Length: 310
Image (cartoon, rainbow, N blue to C red; front, side, top):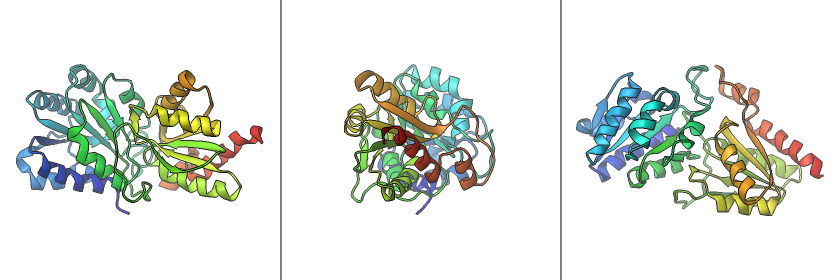
């Protein structure tokens, strides 16, 4: 395993080699978000803005208006929350092809504490009209999405995790925008997950199998536009849907799935994620356990949901 951010940095260089219109903007975090390799390879296309995220988005919008493909980089909490007005007004409203990459998303930010954890970023980006929201599940998928960024029309937000994540996508996999990936078949419950959470879902599904629970695992790397057909199919097959994300239960994948099923296939949905609260500082596994989104916590919530049916 390599960290998702390292896979991103390597793929960013390959994207730059393939597309001379790609320019990379950084918010004084090149070593952390791994844009430094692009800067060394293409110094003329690497712009160090400094700790001025709002200005960085404005500069990116200007570059995009000239036909370039700017990629904005920072921690997710700064790229999204600090620069939200500029993203809304300068990027989303005119539909410019600015690609925003939020690294260090979710709880696991190397003990950065609540000021550095982004647990609301997908919800904010989902709500902006015309903006695509992506959350790859492992290093392979992160690299594939990165190499495709310039091809995705309009503004894009890609959410990346800081740490290494066990592989989740199958050998030979190719990412497709707006398409879910069925990683495991099951009939008792459909667990729909995104981003870093999918690896924990697969762990939980193995443990559930030992208890006689057949869990379908549906990985959703594109949170917007949502693969509604895959969601409806999973709900029809299993009758119970559990969503899982390293994000607030409000506004993210769980909300997207619940909205979809409320309109197309009314089904019981349990949303596993971070309750209405900010993140904290702490060791990775301790934080995941405290917030109930480690594999064990997910397993217990699935079992609790299944109990009335059994």
